[in-house]
Length: 156
Image (cartoon, rainbow, N blue to C red; front, side, top):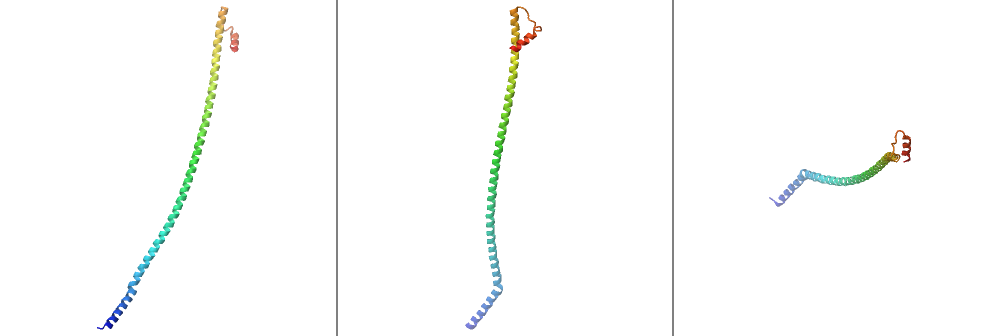
């Protein structure tokens, strides 16, 4: 065989191989590569979207945390105000109760002092009657001399 014919035949076979590859082999490979490129692009876009959503979620979380901190601080301040108010009310009630107890004690002391004075008057009157009996050397009748004895009690 001739080298020219062999070279020509090899060129024809190569051209058929190139045509066959371009017609049947290359399109599925190109399609697969394009699909792969599209998947990678979609994945990168999804990653960017997820990154932006994550940053917005972080901002929302920080906002919610700040609001929660503010609300907690407000509730604590309100609780402290309530506690102070309750303490003040309790102090006021205690002062009122103490004043009532002191007033009752004063009234009771006054009553006891009055009773003690009355008892002392009775005793002084009895002693005065006994002293008068001793001085007069005769018995003094309390029923007969009741008016005199009552005047003596009031004077004492």
